Image (cartoon, rainbow, N blue to C red):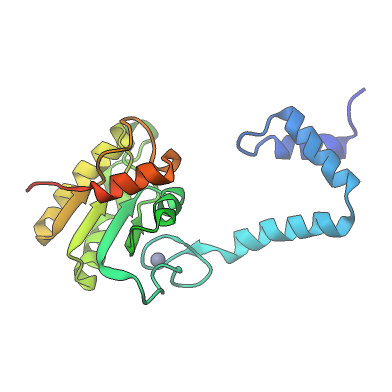
Length: 200
Ligand code: ZN
């Protein structure tokens, strides 16, 4: 016997979530069935609230509830340094170390010929304009040490070089082929401290 259509529909939707297989999706559906309506409503409202309420920071592309994200609107941040990351999870991972107190720039992806993302998708012109306008003296490139991340770092370096500022790359600690996202706190701390300037 199959589940009623409404149950099947929701199993199908939950199964689309990352890391959720059919069995987990079934358990989620039964959680919905077994809990009070208000609780389910709160979950549904939180999902829609996030989708409607969050946007990208006007300055750095970080997730934000207002025009400017928490980092950009924090007066305690060092505005002479910008750390370039591939996505929001990477920004969070680095910021959690607490050793980096500068600003960020989220690329929203790396150069990836396989996915049809070329250098023009990185919007480096906006980044260069921002770096110039802020009077930034150092840019830290914190893209992943994998093929896409390295390609991206190379491209960013050539685009930012004419600005005549210090350009560094996060250093030791993160194994080749892995991701900033999965590095633990101490590894990321070492990487950030061991960043090296990319020679001209
Ligand atoms: Zn921002």
